[in-house]
Length: 250
Image 1 (cartoon, rainbow, N blue to C red):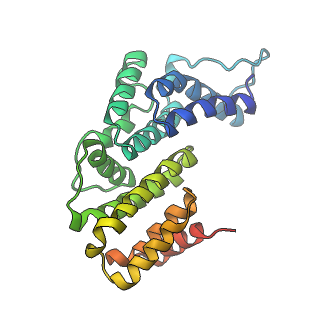
Image 2: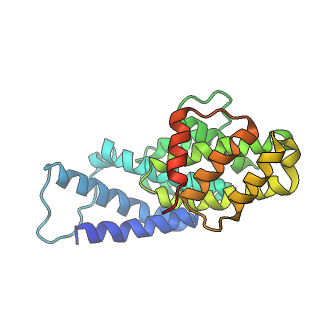
């Protein structure tokens, strides 16, 4: 049926593809996700009426090139590339891009979302540029030397966190990001504390952060907030307040 239940069903399919970095499942669920989101957007805006048979209409060729499909497609592609980068799975990203191109043509909705992940970017400007620059290194296995490693991990974590918060797939990105954050900062605790500032304060703070066992938004926000001084990373009042509010638990 063309209703919220159908939206939830299709969302679950693409959610699982993103969080588990399953390229085949992502390719299989992609068009269905674009169809339902494009259609519900049109219904809510009053542009179309729900069909009598309750079946979600397929996208016309013109709709496949339209802004709504491109918007939802780019969001989904970007989310998949982010979770793949967190797992260092370059093959998955390549498989999705190739599969969608073969299925839908080179200008498929959301195709531009792959661009930030294609090459190194030493001068990122937008948030997407920053995420793509960090993800490119993750996918290439380009690990910073120990003196710079914690700082690069912190910066990548912050950019991924900011981008995840803007996505329709926030929770699907946050969980892998939390797992990655725990792994990277556990490595710092074991091998990299000598490169942190204010070690006498930073190490206890890091241990306290990692003592939290839940891999969720609050955990990521708390690590970013508490480890900023360890890297002598200045946070604006707005950003500090933002992370502080998200790190609180009920």
